[in-house]
Image (cartoon, rainbow, N blue to C red; front, side, top):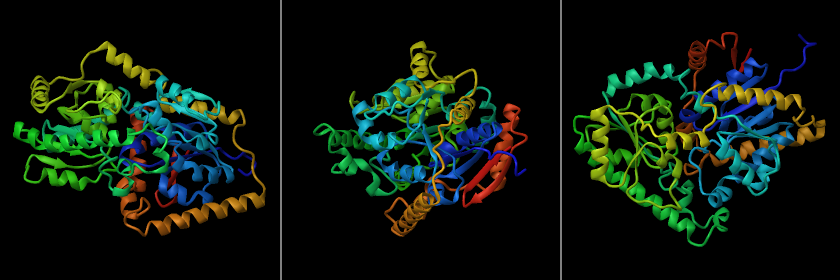
Length: 457
């Protein structure tokens, strides 16, 4: 009805589809239940169409310097910006984090932060330029998908994977910094970049050397595991931004090794006999789900290793030890270690492991955020027109840059990160979430543009 007040809008961008989409869909549904019009879809497409989307609250995945221009445009369009840090389960050392992931200029445009747990909340408040905005220790909807309430959703896809591969070994890699799909974006190959110049002398070169050494060891590990376990299928899932071709070449001539990147990783973790990784979020996810994971650490560095994933589960420092540990796990059908110290460490980094879901905590905090009137005031027609011109101009620059194959805006790279979700698939996923939780039956969806959907009650 025309007399009804306009419903608030929540813009939820998704950068890496297989990693983020299901969790952010859960958040969109929880927000829609509270009266939001939740706009969900490809972050790239959302940015290209920003001026044509409804004004609302933008839920940013990070606050890096690369986001600053888009943040400025969104604020000029009349949007509020709140943020989480999608990478919080692989915490960097403070110095590197502040240089790589926390732009003071971008922080100044954020009105609230949603932390995965106490550790990420404290780190955010230590950032140079922290603007004193509210910090909500809500957990993250990706954590919700690992909880017992939603774990039944993994049963059918996990069963299908076991029927396809048996009790397979899963390897997850995390080498985008030295093996990027777009080579020039692998920042450890570019030590002269301006944002790295203030790091301690030699730090970037040392970090690059460490990551490349691990990358080489993992390439040697794959055939060694294939030979040690010829009766087992091995599935290697590269990180979404990695060049998967490297791993396909490693797998050549190894009939029991499959390089695949299909769907969310959680069913793969649930189906696998064991996960092998180094410094990968999947190590944290596996431990939270009670699944066995081995951090393979053939070279170690207190300064450069991503400590949390490697501190949970089991570890091995050499190939013979890795093979022995994997065999001990698979033959004994063992899960995650029952270690109180590791459970305490996880709780420091992942909140909402019980009680209200993280998606509900976030949606409630956003509703209160709006009630307190934190959305920017509507701008005048001239200011709005200038903001629209800035947004459309940026979009055309991005499209033109995308004509280059070595640019992050190239359609092939964007499809690599966000293959797309059809309307029927979106509705099916909402129905699955609803059946698991006994909710979401009154929600509706409609398309707003290419790979952008609105979810509302």
